Image 1: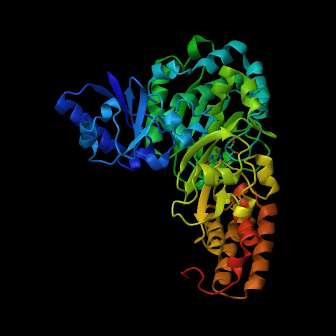
Image 2 (image 1 turned 180 degrees about the vertical axis):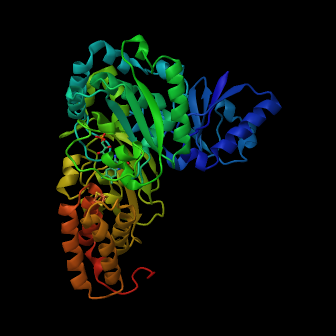
Image 3 (image 1 turned 45 degrees about the horizontal axis):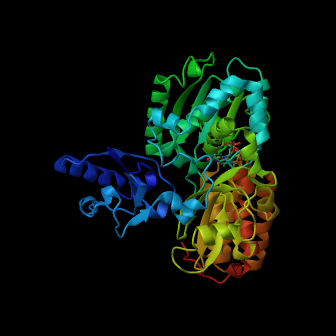
Length: 517
Ligand SMILES: Cc1cc2nc3c(=O)[nH]c(=O)nc-3n(C[C@H](O)[C@H](O)[C@H](O)COP(=O)(O)O)c2cc1C
Ligand code: SF4
């Protein structure tokens, strides 16, 4: 029996995929057609969602974007056998957006049935965990260190060193925490992997558990991701049933289990120590460091806290060995990075590639420029705390150090594209406003600075002593950068200062450049 793949991914669901699935199900029943509907993950080509795929003797043929109400006409046109149609895309692997990628972490996403453990195994799943159990804790840590993997949550800290610290720490209990708060604007890689290949995160967390002696894992998942919450919970249940999690991980002497905890929705709860406070049932507020979470983390115990993509990258590293991973990338940025393209871009979606492509290649060649068709003016890289890059800096390669050298950051690898209608002074004001709303309030430079920054940029917008107020903003940015306790206050100056530095023409102080409130 052939298969019809209709994504359950939020991209597709937001555009009617659930209705489309129901329509195909009804047609199947009414007409006695013989095909199975598989709710798969997304292949990452967001502008083509909902993109359905039909299994044919010649491979999987994609069609998209499909709209609710189209199922009957599509079946009549013969798409169940791969027939031509205006929405025919062909084989996903041959699509230029997909062909140019190196799918490492996302190699199964969109291909398998996310909740089928059998399908996961059939596509290479659990090989990393099996090998990890075989080689033991020290060798796992060695392999992850050797791969050069750095944290994908933003700071780029070497994962092997973090795991080693926890492995060597003593505590009555140790924990693995997956940071699935994914608060950065324009990012969705964590969500996509949790919805499309949940066992990959489960396997990565179990590997971290075996490597460090942790027996319990938590996935701190944002409440705005209801599909991911459901998929993760069901995958954990099935992994427990299948002996992947529990008292004997894959039949070994290792104990490891996982629970999903849903965050209430605060950007600062993505910061690792606030996240731990929130997990403990407290109000999420940043903790002083030291002690590091690796030494005294959740409930005061040694804790690995890693981003979802960091953890989900480890099964393949363990399965295939560190060498292949290490060979990809540039400088100290090794392996692949799932880049998320959003904002005003023609081809938005997830593009996984080795580090090293330039920002210009990603935005213009892969992304196809703006969706509006107007010239690209800026790209904000790394979420709301990331710098705005002008086109003149588009030759910057995607690499942690190269971005830092240009006063920017890669963060969680989200790129938000803007065309020439963007008002950078409004964007600078927004950066302060965001910080003021999301600040946890623990330290003065951020709590007070963000509000004062917002007010001062507003004065410039209103034409009130622009030169003087601009100098004040710069001064304030320095105080926030060097005086804040965490990166929320410490990095808000990045979008502000990059907007001022690279787009000075927007800060000339003419009144009413943006709508006054
Ligand atoms: C304000 C703020 C928000 C953050 N939000 C996230 C987030 O949503 N997801 C994430 O993985 N890391 C986030 N981080 C980074 C985490 O503090 C931490 O560095 C990360 O979870 C460590 O995992 P990694 O080493 O795998 O990157 C945030 C940091 C700050 C300062
Ligand atoms: S910088 Fe802001 S978010 Fe971070 S600790 Fe200080 S007040 Fe809290």
